[in-house]
Amino acid sequence: MSASGARRTPDVVVIGGGAAGCMAAYTAAEAGAAVTLLERNPKLGRKLYITGKGRCNVTNDCTPAEALQNVPRGNRFLISAMTRFPPERTKAFFEKLGVPLKTERGNRVFPCSDKSADIIDALLRALRRAGVHIVQDRALSLARDGETLTGVAGERGWYPCRAVVVTTGGVSYPLTGSTGDGYALAEALGHTVIPPRGSLVPLESESPWCVQMQGLSLRNVGLTVWDQRGKKIFREQGELLFTHFGLSGPLALSASAHMDFTKGGYIASIDWKPALDDKKLDARLLREFAERSNQDCANALGALVPRSAIPVMVQWMGVSLHTKVHEIRKDQRMALLAALKGFAIPIKGPRPVEEAIITAGGVKLSELDPKTMQSKKVPGVFFAGEVLDADAYTGGFNLQIAWCTGRAAGEGAAHYCRGAEGL
Image 1 (tube, rainbow, N blue to C red):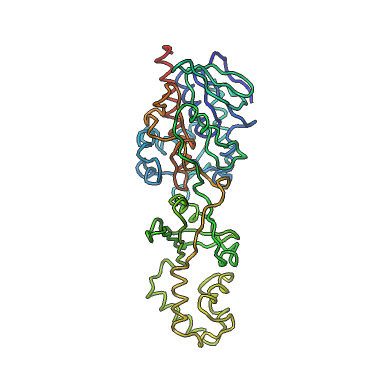
Image 2: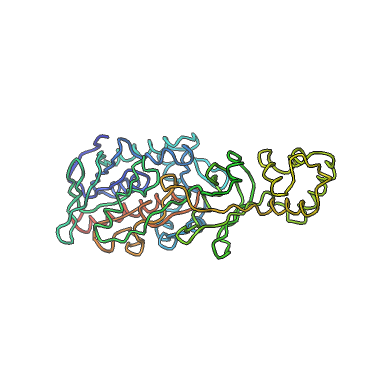
């Protein structure tokens, strides 16, 4: 990393060069502040490189209200930031930086090139043009003189400043640099940190069915999740993947955002035929069985489920692979119907947080100003991005949180400095 532009004593130090940090640094610099961006990695945006399977799901092409509906934790706090910098402005921001965008299924927005590197390169060029000084260093602590912030102590140097924006991410994907540094900085300032846990994370199950069907990917299936009290907490249709440890794929990741495993396990119910109700599905079973009455179950069920699922369905029915279809009793057909409409998988917990796409938990939102992201405890300190106790579902919504909170924090930090020193 190298310096860009004429340098003077920084007004603002941004800690963390991910999505929120880059946006905060650029915004503060554009507002006239002298900005230093500290990033512990040799390159900015390590986590951005892997988002959207390397394609970078930049945002979701929807209204602010629709975006907030996809934020299960922190949506009220985000109203101001999301309204002032909605997905529409995010799209315009990157297109102005020279990155053509496209909208795909589910209103997911990607670079036309399908390369996350294009987003990162555009941000880096923008930061350099704005005169942001980029330094490879890891922040260790924030220094104060009484209630006045004086600077940031790093592993390699000291960075005096009047305002700090903490955008260090959560604890998911630690190899990208997200190792929880921001939580320690926040707690040292007296902030409450909601214990972090994985969200948008695969789910673990001890069900032998998952092992038997590992590698099987399902499309257009329904997933319903029930909690310990029998309350339905999630229902959605989409794609699901069986693995050796349990369930993965978009449906499992989205469901995980609704789960709190401190209260126990859950039951996931898979509807293999969500387009058919029980009556219509039974009629189809009768039709398929009549047409294949002399075939083995192993062959006849191929018209209903993927081949790797056939041995499992046969076990549910209580028959063998070589049982002739005309030998199937009504109660066995009803067992198959029940399996196709409600294939129950007990969920014991999430995969490790290191495998999560996003971190739930973080700096308590009630201790921050939702308009500026400024700490209510320490003037001049701002927080943005995944370090906050706010997270969303898949589809570009978490990056949208990073962009809009980074924008708000950058504006807030620059405004704070102008008030303090008459910038």
